[in-house]
Image (cartoon, rainbow, N blue to C red):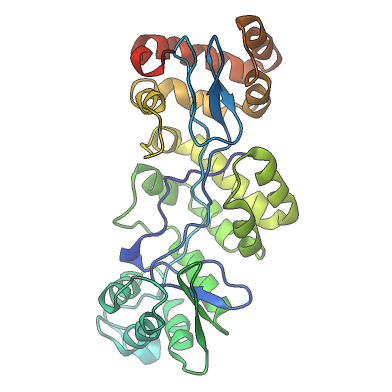
Length: 333
């Protein structure tokens, strides 16, 4: 199973996103948390004759003929949003305006916990930003978070405020807010929120999403992702659906979006060979092809892998052809 793309930047302070990790105690840092996890599931390593795909790298390597690949990278998991508020109504009805008691008091408690870098102004702005789309979810969120009976403790590792007793309202708001665009979204995030909203909401709302998220975030290969999915099957199935939707609907936006970890070869392929890169990364048999071709030291070995895994193999050949023309300097040996 491929990871959804990391380039879906869900940890955006302008929306004051709420972490979806809220089982034992609700987590809210006012700034957001990426639940998709990082790392690619089909990166590459080069052989003597061509760039190949290998599981576990974020980006592809290169071979002597200039071939290289980039793997499916993580992102997206789900994210969530903090309480927002309406620009008109009163706190008693759930709608609150800028500087309203609901948002102000909830944010004051979050900021006072000093678990992150968000400011009161940023938190309130994010709270109010969801007033229209999440009007039903805002009142119970701000009421629960504002309640001094619900203890807030700081998780220094996650830089998040854990709010006891607010699990359900935070998750409800998370599901509602995950599809809302943010000023920090890049092309992949914007496309995914708009085109993959249903599967994103299913993922964020999964009962086992917290356990799955903690498991999958450090994964660097397909075997790890699959093990996490087996242990948390509800979130795992939703996670796979997010990846499938991103590749099918937002392929160019997500596969070819620049990543600071890209090698010169991969960065060139994303610009010069994007149309060829997407089918390769999206191939149904890419994991098998990657495993087969990684140790290859000659063309005969590569050709055997292409025969055994024809979809990825054919896409690989096309990608190599483009790389030899467009990215020879960057991807050549």
